[in-house]
Amino acid sequence: MPVAPDPLDVREKVRAFALALPGAGEEFPWGESVVKVNKKVFVFLGVGDGSHPPRIGVKLTDPEVHAHALTVPGAEPSGYGLGRAGWVSVPFAEGTPAAEVLCEWVEESYRVIAPKRLIAELDAR
Image (cartoon, rainbow, N blue to C red; front, side):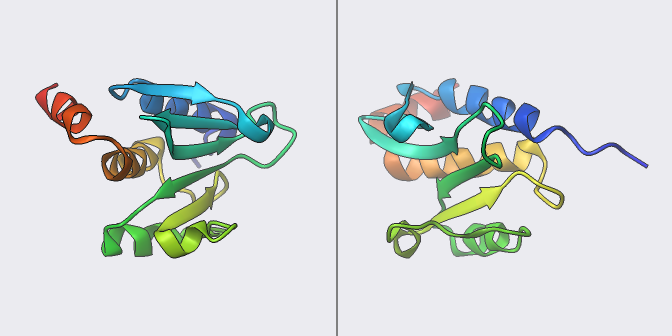
């Protein structure tokens, strides 16, 4: 039986992917990690010290991708009214998709938030 990946390892893979996107930078408002582009958050990563259950928050505007994300056990529309704008909070737990899928969701969130010139730079890679 395969061993489930460590949620903090998955979080770190997703964080590294997000930070490698053009113009991305990490900040720590509220003591939690967020990755921004053009001063706007495109992924919430929570805290990485294991003190809280790891989760990711991304903005998914593609209806199929959004619906898929909400099928993950424990996933829910993000709080503070963000869910109405397409934001989804997904815990890193049993049943969470592989890091590669989470990175695809991060890229979709990035493409919704980033300016066109940075999306063009990403597409040119």
